[in-house]
Image 1 (cartoon, rainbow, N blue to C red):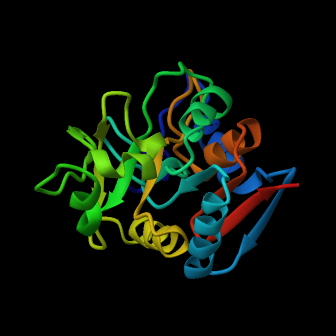
Image 2: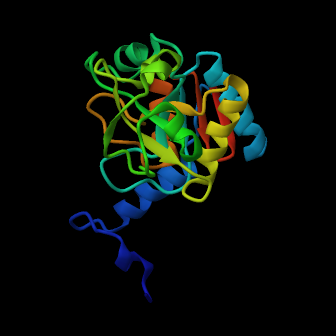
Amino acid sequence: LQNPLEILQPSQNRPMLALICCLWKSLLWKPRGVYMAQQGFPVVAQVAAKLIAEGKVIGWFQGRSEIGPRALGNRSILADPRNPLMRDHVNQNVKHREWYRPAAPAVLEKDASLYFHIDRPLPFMLFAVQAREERIGEIPSAVHIDGSARVQTVNEHQNPRFYQLISEFKLCTGIPMLINTSFNDQGEPIVESPVDALTAFKRMDLDALVLGDYLVLKK
């Protein structure tokens, strides 16, 4: 394009308005009330896994957003499936939604059959399967009242960073999964940009945010 403004949608007779908004969000906006530390992703993944194992709820923002009906590890809120109160906490205090809403288990593909009656990868969180009855007590917040779960399997090729986080959590706890729900509050769309993620993090009852290679905490 000879004129870069041709790709921007004009607003009535003010074609510069869209460009100004882009610049404001990507260049001029400065987060306040948070502490950001860049330590490299392997270290950030280890710290995030330990925070989740300690009962913290984190926002997780990586790369491009997903397309489709589920958050699959790029725009997610993540928590510990071992805590029987965690699903209620996420529903009531973090996402401000109905108490009965499920939080899906994101489980390492290689370990999925140890916890669920599953014989194939389910990477898109579209099917409900039954949990193995003898394992439900280990992951109570990942299982519905009828013993079912809407499972997402994760492998290293599908989503390397999400796989690494879950693997670090397994090293901490012995459990190869996290509960995963979309990164948004009640009545809000899923966060799209880093600005959206930081704004939602400050507003919601989240304990930490992983934003690419950055660990973000509230001051």
